[in-house]
Amino acid sequence: MDCNELLNVAGYAGKILLESGAEVYRCEETMVKIAQSFDVDEVQAFVMTTGIMLSITHNQQNYTKILRIQKRGVDLHKIDSINELSRTIKAKQYKINDVMELLKQLDQEPRYSLFVTLFFSALSAFGFALFFQGSLFDAFCAFTVGFCIKITAVGMERNNVNAFFQNAVAAGVGAFITLLCVQLSVCDSMDTVMISGMMLLVPGLAITNAIRDTVAGDYVSGLSRGAEAFLTAIAIAVGIGAVLAVWMNVTGGI
Amino acid sequence: MWLIAVSGFTATVGFGVLFNIKGKKLYLAGIGGMLGGVIYSLCKMNECPEALSLFYAGVGFALYSEIFARICRTPVTTFIICALIPLVPGKGMYETMRYAVAGDAQTALQTGLDTLIYAGALALGIILVSTLMRFLCHHPKPSKTI
Image (tube, rainbow over all chains, first blue to last red; front, top):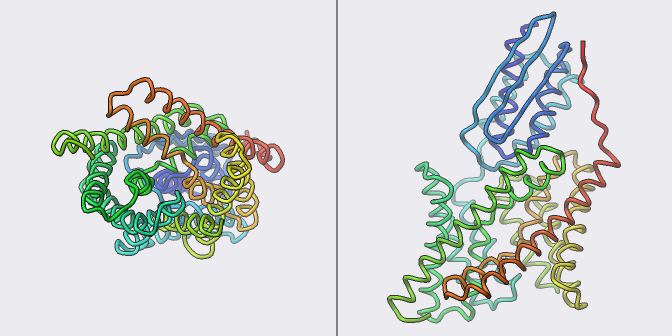
């Protein structure tokens, strides 16, 4: 058995997991499970939100790989599939190459298309407006606001703008559209529309992972996820706050 | 109540698509969000304090997620991340910011503190369930040594 090959496969699986937003302990466990399916003597994995260290000992030889993770997105489907794969390797007697092929296939599976994503984020904002007891007019305004927020966020993400700025600008655009709706008096409650739109930027993954990593004892990752969630909240507040302040200054009120 | 349920479901399914959940798990995640929303508004209707309602809702949807994750053999996060979102105290954060922009620092601090407590209560519910489930179902094998 080629341990270097195994290291690459396990590392690749870990990389996809971390980039898709898995918790740290899941990433470690999955890599160890994959390596152990091929009966090596010892595996150790150490993962943080920004990098992976993986080392295998076999026949008194040590092999180590370090991966740096730059991209961080959310793709729960990939986490689900890799989780499934790592459990079945031993039972289905895959070779190392087979696993690599499967991982590559998995990595290239398409997401929902841009249009579907935009539509569903707008629909989500629509749902939130009704959830927060807004009127139907509020809901339709929130639909528009959600659409604009998401299209801004996606556009900036594609141009590799950093996360803080991305959230602040998207929130600012959302606030501006809401104020326009209020000005044209199409919506009843400005607050409801604004909050429903902003819910799209809420860092649900960061909050959940901060909690789960802390519970699992990975305090470093838990804290850094918590900081990510907190910074995102601040970015949203800065974005809305700036637009509101400028609007009040220019028009003299809301 | 029906409106809360349907809108909670819609909002959560929308988020499920953003997070790229596929197949029937998408609807299951939506039901998780609906459950959280319904428990929360039921508690509010019975005059529970805000933080306690969030705690109950957190426990409710976390339990649902843990159970269905085991049935579908999928990571728990698939359901929890989506179901959590309708309950995030976005309103509190927004009001804090409004007061801060208006220059009312006292009220802003007060609202901010309340919001932190609400978020903490929600997190506490999830932590409780997650710890219980680890205690009951999770038996990590020690890694093989030479």
